Length: 289
Image (cartoon, rainbow, N blue to C red; front, side):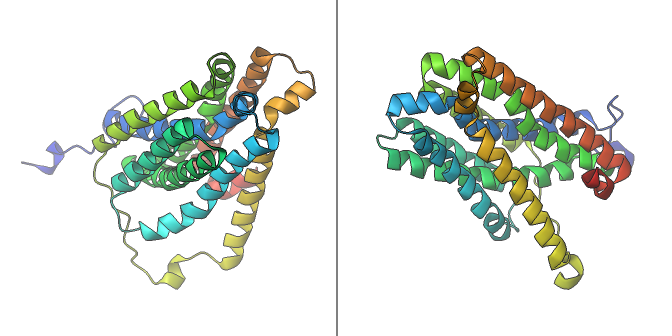
């Protein structure tokens, strides 16, 4: 059989120029990020509901999000080192399993301490899944689409702020926070099963010395500092956005959900434009812009 009969699914003659199979795999990864991000950001919309149902302070509910974020930040780099030789499918599946399990325990926990521990587990799963999803996305698309593939994965986060969080904010005030988190866990379980449709994806083997491959320490420090400041600024405000908007008399639950929707739309637009510019201009010029 000639080599031409084995078409690369990443570069077939689809109208998008990416390939139908590659696009489907990319959407599966983006859907996983969507569910993970919904589980992270939905606590902001549910904060007043959780406060009322558990009879705890706003600060105590905020600390649940803080525990999730810290677990994510600490476990993501450690996990990247420990699982560097794993098939990416196993990393993705394990991360989603931890996230789903932690979210379910959050629903069923009988104490605040149990909820805190469950959020730590869910955050660790998210920290395991998201970087692996970005790496897998790059592996399943043509080289010309790699920046847009990463943007698509990050777009799952933006889509969560557009759709899931505002809707969950409204539904949560009507049905309570437990049905909302249960629905997120169910979606995560479905995505976890779908992840096995991905091909085997091994991490690339290093061909040069560690010194040649590693970026300068100063560059790493600057990038980590900027990322940390952006994340802190995002979570510090977004976690308490519902009581903040209520204090500012922004309106009822529907109005707050609408404002969250506008915030998410801005994130989606920025993400799409950023991915296009990164493929055309390069990452340096795009980041500076």
